[in-house]
Length: 429
Image (cartoon, rainbow, N blue to C red; front, side, top):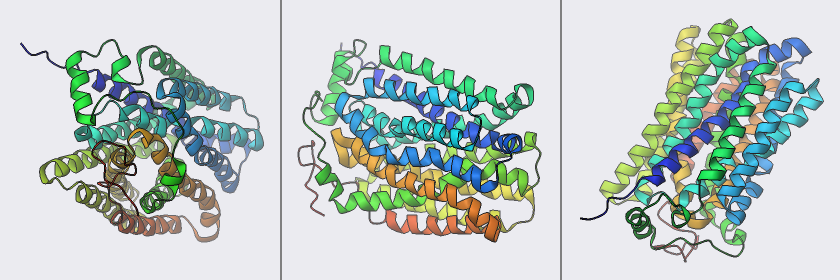
């Protein structure tokens, strides 16, 4: 009787989903607490923008070093180290006493989180079957948005009960617990994991073109950075990052100060678009994988779903901004964020499609662009609102969605960057 494959790869995936949840929970704590922090310290909108932007600059600058670390020492050790680092700075945020110290703390929090998604992408590259990549990336990013969606109401409750510092302490401890589980259970390859049976190892090896042994040598940065597809992927993700930062960093403040919700309703309504984003994350990756599997056209499957997601986002942002009804604003914002998140599972599947064992580094380049967009957006919003009001930043975001959809049409996920990858065809763009 043929041995039935174990499903350790799916446990790896779900443990990674929890990590993604924690990354966004830790990020959203400060945006949910921002109104109370501003109230206590007297920070202006522009000062708060600089504090929020400090995280994004640290996050953007250390994307590539983070991806390199995962490719160099393996995701087991690398992810353990960075989760411990960012969790420490999450908790330390509660001890900050002014704008400068808080900005410095948030910068180093960003440094810690910078490697999370590239290293996690690398951790899945030797475990997930190619037919599962879009779905896997959709599930992981859905987990991050689910964590972010649950966080505002929890933080609002904690703030009312214990003050704004308590959430930072609690969420920092969650990350430390996860890091310990990851280090003692996860292994960099299926061949190293004692719970993987021979049937699952054979299934993974056959799908990936043979055993994936630890690779020696450096990351081929010249090949990655000289490839036109890498830059197109990065510019597309710049557009995504610009828009995402507005919702993650500023939506609670926007709902409270411009739409007039109290802190309880702010916490609830700030979470609803994130729940819609969870659906978008799951749907985008799944549809793309199914389309590719049935048609055999990976290029079109990735391009069409990604472009459609950006189009839906733009169509949601405009009426959300124009309506004078606060509830309709939230409803249209849910549509906009749903569309924006449709693109995510597809976008993060592409580094796995084209990058192979260097998927961490390829995704790090992509995410660097995305978070430069987010860093500029977060800081710029305070100044834009002061000069032009709250509507203009959202109209700009709609424009970036249109541009992102156009750029998606120039990305070919079927062309591998490296000749040595199984089944790869050289990409000389």
